[in-house]
Amino acid sequence: DDAPEPSTPPDAETQKAPCPKARRASIGFVGGGAMAEAIARGFVAGGAARFPDLAVSHGSDPATAARWRALDVDVLSSNAEILDRCDVVFFAVKPHILPNVLTECGAHVDVDRHLFVSVAAGVSSSFIEDSLKKSAQGGIAPGRPGPGAAPSNNKKETEKNTRVVTVSTPKVVRVMPNTPCLVGEAASAACKGSAASDEDVTFVVELMRSCGLCLNVSSESLLDAVTGVSGSGPAYAFLFIEALADGGVAAGLPRSTATVLAAQTLLGAAKMVLETGEHPGALKDKVCSPGGATIQAVRALESNGFRSAAMEAVLASATKSRELGIESEKQHRGK
Image 1 (cartoon, helix red, strand yellow):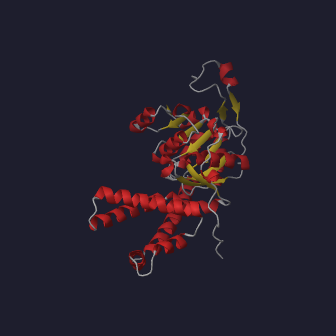
Image 2 (spheres, helix red, strand yellow):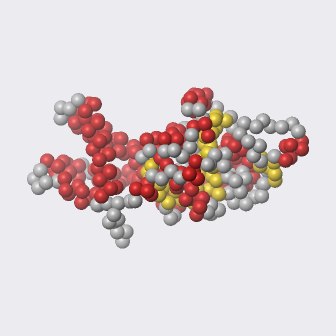
């Protein structure tokens, strides 16, 4: 049976609560794309970090590097440098790219120091753990001479700043965020791997709450469903806003007016769900007067498969997320 619906709205403190602990972390991003930038901007806007305290590796794209430098973020040339500089490392790359990134980073892992946060859809924490362990075997991990410290040619100093890696399981937390991190209204979920502690996942959840809502889900298998609902969800919302605005234009409204009204309508409706704790169906019924305009509009949506289309979109995204993870792991293991 379905779980009962919540009778009270979520506690506001569980939705947005940047923590002092989050501000003390040195945070790096492996991958400098749209999601990494949205998360970074959200952290800064939410008070969990400052741009100069963040670092990013950009690959070989000069435009990406320039965009991050304009934010005053420390732009590094390699993923290994991110691990050398940062305690909390976000893997913000596509699923098919992540295996190669893990291979490159493994020899620089310090399991006592690093906490890895992966936002790659579908790729399991166990795969990330195993890949980092495998690539770390026989490697050495740099110590912490400090951000910006140049490599030394002095043998004794080099030995002092390196140590043999103990090949144990790295701490990994998976997160599925979404792009409204950019405006402090993310809907994210997190789940810890086998070596991460409750404290580790709580830290990540609190960090993510600096840019919106973040929930700690009990099972990693649920993250594919999270991808379907909230990870991909902004695209559904944007599409619906555009369709509402198109309808408004067809009915005679100027485009700008129709778009603002459509967007604010979704924002207001979402706040009613979150703040009243009432079931969305009950709130919908309150708008639908007998024989009125709204119930006729709902009838038109239902007759055109609106509800079914939304459900199928979630399932399609969740399925693709699962497939992306399987394909990524299979390709890497086949090498």
